[in-house]
Length: 352
Image (cartoon, rainbow, N blue to C red; front, top):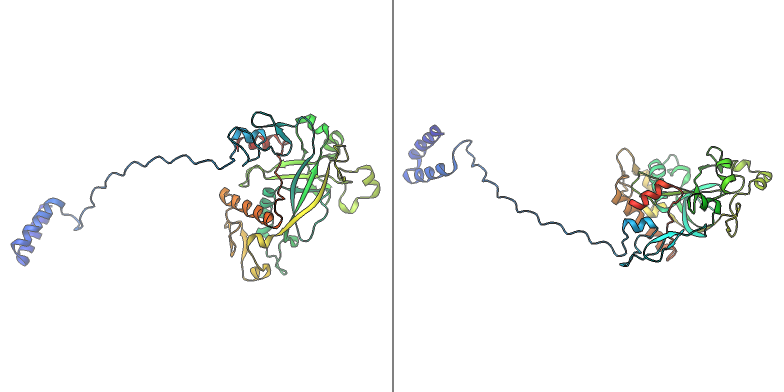
């Protein structure tokens, strides 16, 4: 460093004179000499961040314990009273409890369709969160199918049904649950092993439920099974004799009898394009757009489905879905029941 100072001192003296040299010497003493760049000043210590205030719970927020007892989120009050979900009743001192027997429940289920869908017997239907997850993973990522530029099977809407359910007391006695065991249907036929021996004979033709776990759509991501007549056969094989022998659970006014556990009525529908903000689906496809690409985890020309595992994005989709139904059919939304047959789903509801 001394050699550096001497060389620069001589050069400056020859060029500028004493005044400049004096100024330079003072600078060298304070800053040093190395690469020719002044060293960065020592950073000032950062002030300690102020602790963030705890988030204020939203009005009506329910604690984990109250949710687990059966309180409907958004309905809890300071004294721990709340509105109970279908199948639960107030325990009289804050929170909810089991009804004590099988009772009538009313709730909504949803199906995707390519036209007005009028019969959901011998089929599976979902909660709002369940149908959005199904659309996300099974429908929109396979959209724009040539040559017609449609979604699989021409799906273009979500149809909502109001279900009135009264399952049998045999189901309630097994687990103190309002729902029974879920079974999968395909083309009108129960696909589970020995549906009759495992479900219909011991419990009757009951409505079943299943929570879909490990998704961003939460524990209210549920599917239900709705057994109609002759559930052992596909639609094309349901003979009159089979329907008489296996009457199913659909009836006009459910009573909890083994063959009278549920009824359904259509209660509105929305178009998928409207939910996504697409005005013309064929034009959307012809422009090279896609609703959702699973590999990229986003769409092209459409951002509605971006982030399949993003919980905040999933909540925004649920909110948009529910608000669209509410805007078309005001004050008709029904509370989502707890899938109480499914012990894992019930436990997740308690700790969610």
